[in-house]
Length: 268
Image (cartoon, rainbow, N blue to C red; front, side):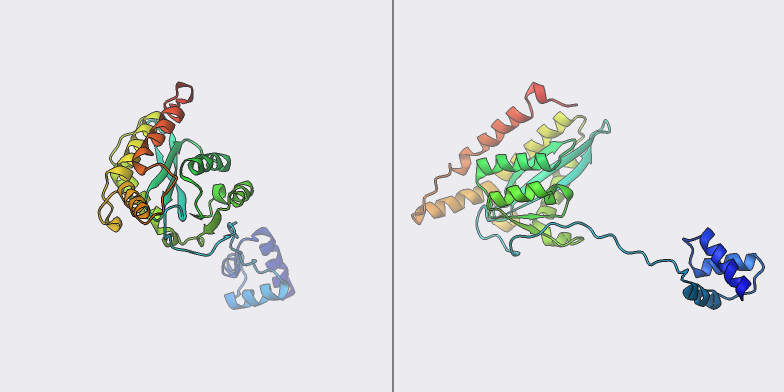
């Protein structure tokens, strides 16, 4: 038995990744007449068992608000990334931001790379244009749980709502929007360059906001739905200081021309 234990120790040191079944097979090949149960018991006694693998703990963001359903514009926004490629092989990364109540696409920012600092810059522009949301629905991507970004959101009084890992159904609005984006735009277009992708995707976003009927909104577009809400609010004596929705598309166009079509920013 002492010789068997010595052979077992030597075999386990040579193959520390192997369990008792494989070690038993190797010992039999070496001429030992042993069974798997005996080797399992001896390995337990000698402390030679392979440690159980512990699942890696995924870093998650800390929600600062309770799960809530949007009840008015700018109540809850949701954001996430979409990935694609150009015909020349370059990567495309798109940051999408959606208002869960009006279903309006606030932004589809297209770039090769988008980090947490860029996310904060885009969000800052959207807040200046549309006002700050009360909550923002998010996955646990590294760009969304970055410490400085979360601190900045808190400084803007924006509460974070992070979904559970592996639970995309908790963020159904953005998932549905991404399905429309892929079916109606990305799968239908051949995009050769980053500049072309930006123009084509922005054109689709404007169509989605202004023309595309939305079933959950009574088959009107998100912009028409927002105009309807503003008209109802105005008729009830709750005038809004924000410009009418019909004038806001020009702000989108101005940003597109300034940020994407500026020759100093063109990227192939």
